[in-house]
Image (cartoon, rainbow, N blue to C red; front, side, top):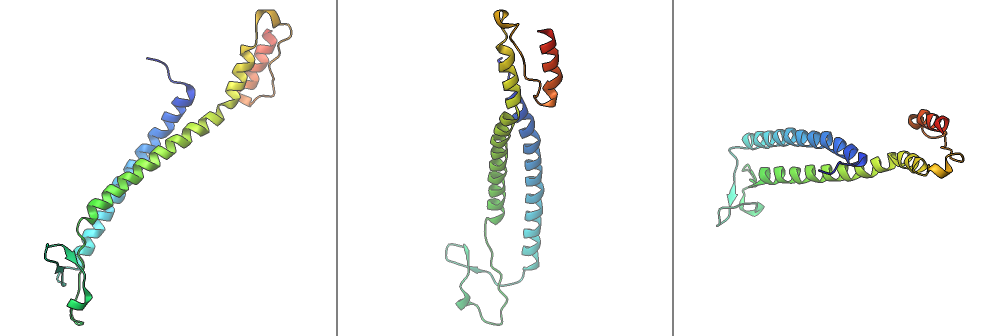
Length: 150
């Protein structure tokens, strides 16, 4: 199996906690939303529900007397609510992964620059070779050591 690049490793290590967090939030928000939808439906029991010929719930205010209570029943809302939340969870996780890939690539630019400088060291140009020591702090000691070795 081919080894993953550092950029892909950072991306995967970032996407994993983001994905776990998104799924956890989705589960908690869905259960909370469904609970409160059920609570609202229970509190509205006893009102008038208007069903059309096909048995689907509908609202026609002209058919209700002005002194009657009215409850509008919306069928399938909880299922659509859950489905929409899963789509949002997937989209946020995917966008976070794409963003993590590009941000990690940007963060690894100094490493690529340092690696290209070191790759230029050849047996015939060792006397003239010099690595920039003004690199980021993580590479400063390595640059100094490499220059001293040369």
